Length: 294
Image 1: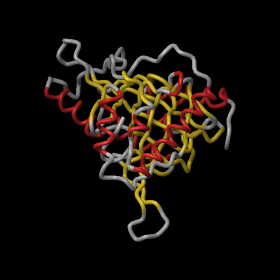
Image 2: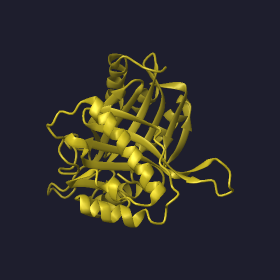
Image 3: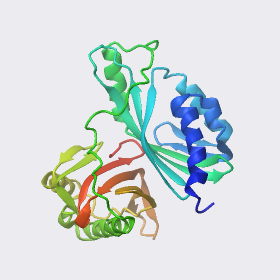
Image 4: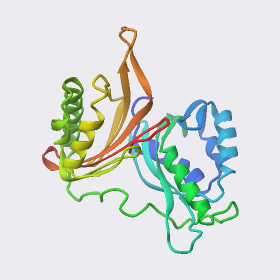
């Protein structure tokens, strides 16, 4: 299907969320996929068909009875849903210490209450770090989950109150993409970095957190130096208020001299917040594959 009424997708998405995030009924949750559905979990593998998805998710989640989940937000556009969910572990220390990591997911609705595509984006290294720290601090297999846990405070900037029209956000996103294309072509990332506010935040899971336009510019200029021929064609995007959620492959030219582009193992899943006058408040970026940017 191409475009969907928002309610047509929202109602089955509520059921998807209830069976998974709330009830943890993974066999029932897997039944919400079509018989030919595709599920991409960049770290654990790709799964084809409802039966394979069911076998994998049921066996996998049995290994993690301590995890509780909290879906911070979701956005629906046509037949696609983007969501941001936290995987939380209970505090074994009793001190209020947090153990958690986020995951970004895209879904595609196929009609009749079913989904035919899911792809998850998170940082496996970050997940491993959280689990190791939790075990070191006393967490065990029989430690009960804490369903009251939410997201980690100050993980991302607060959503601004400024109302920005969809038309303005979409136009500024086009400019953002175009400035990136120019930066790739010229090797000059200064104009691209100047799109961010002076107090913007940039969270790149592999390289770190960068606070402020100057830090973002210094980092992007240094890191993109070795990759002047890399391109970032936008696969698709969703606009939700002043938030843009975009799936962007990272591609290199064909080393054999052909016309095809070679996609890297990672795809950038970017979340951006637009402010007025075309300046961005922050960027959160997460590709799949062995390392994550968020």
